[in-house]
Image (cartoon, helix red, strand yellow):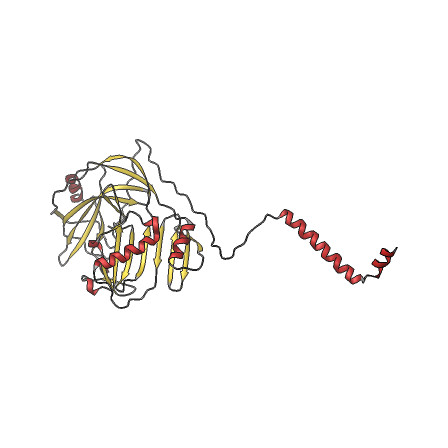
Amino acid sequence: MERQNFIQKINPKILAVVLLFFIVFIIMALLSLFKSPKTSNKNAPEVFPTPTLVPIQIPEGAQIPTPVIKTAPNVLINRLGDVTFGIINKTFPKKVKLYTFTPTAIETVNAQTIARSLLFATPGKQLSTNDGQAISFQEGPKSLIFYLGKGNIQYFSGAQVGVRTVGSEKDVIDSAQAFLKTFDSYAQNLSANPSLISYLVGSGNTRLVSRFEDADYYDVPFSQKINDLTLYVQLANPARAHVLVNKSKQITKATLNTPDILTAVKDVGIISIDDAKNKIIDNEGTIVSYGAGDQFETTLPVPDRTIFVSVELGYLNDNINYTLYPIYIFSGTAFTENQEEKIVVYLPALK
């Protein structure tokens, strides 16, 4: 009786508030039973799935796909004129390994680690591009992008040219090599070739110069060898990586392709150097480089004659068929009535 009188004396408004809190507590307790626990960290970087690529397979006895070789963009007609050779006799293997390959996909976690080491503080941004999924970073004028499935990395620092501090090609190469170490396993098995360093001046549209001391920038290419054969890509480019160093010893720009995962298919026969020369004379090669510098985008006249002074056996990275093809690389000079230009021709070397 006393308890009933006590409840009747309680203010109805207070009773309603207490009842409301009790109902809310019960609802929250029930929701927690159906909700899986989740931790939240706003500062944690997003992790994007990395696509898995599979190399093409060439069944035993099947015909090997024809390599895709691109003609230099300034070549109107793929013709060499009268061809002569000033090549010192060289010995090449009669057989080499034929490989299929898969680009090494870039793991998002590794991309985040590399970005932090280059002082990008913000998390990456996911992009869908013509080259597949990518993750990009931006920090002031600096940018860094990873094409995950394609295995390509591009870096731009925005560094301005200052006082000259490089004194030799060794300074330039040392700076480029130190920078590539940032990319860890993605930059393994690379070597710089001092003879292929380009000297550049200007900003935006740069042009080649001939003297080291006149250059504002130095383009250092890094190539890879497989079974002692240099790996080439399209347009006479033997580089898997390029690092642009300015005369102030700063890294301005860098591009890097991750090393391919190789699968040896079989041993294949190679045509002899004499047969290769005859094929060049019969115009079966492809002009992949003609002229240099600011002439590269300008259509040059068809050569009247061409003399080749060097030949090399290498591999062509055909990213259409995902195959490494053996090719001969012929280098020399093309002559017209009023000028002479450097020229490079690829010739498939399969028997």
